Amino acid sequence: MKSKPMKSFEEMIPKQYRPFSKVFSKEESKRLPEHSNQNHIIELIPGATGFHSKIYPLSRDEDIKLKKFIDENLHKGYIVNKLRLKKPYLTCLPTLTYSPHK
Image (tube, rainbow, N blue to C red; front, side):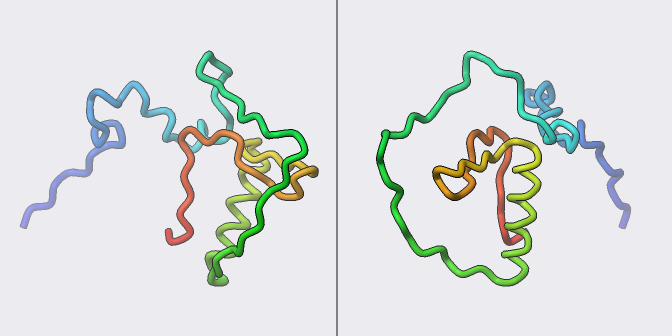
């Protein structure tokens, strides 16, 4: 059986999406995109309190991956630690997804 030649990253992307291929690079993921007219802000209601809910249990491996994800994205500036909220929250993640099962 003859094996198929390996395709390059560029060849695996459909032609119509190739102009956007840089958003998937490791280097580009280290910084947020430039500000544009598509930016938005989520206004919080002054004095409102957050709701409390149980966090679903994570395995040890999932917990380690989650902590690594949070640390990396705090460092990149994708997550901002707001002391008044007492927990970090995600501000804008246009191309970033997280799956603890990877």
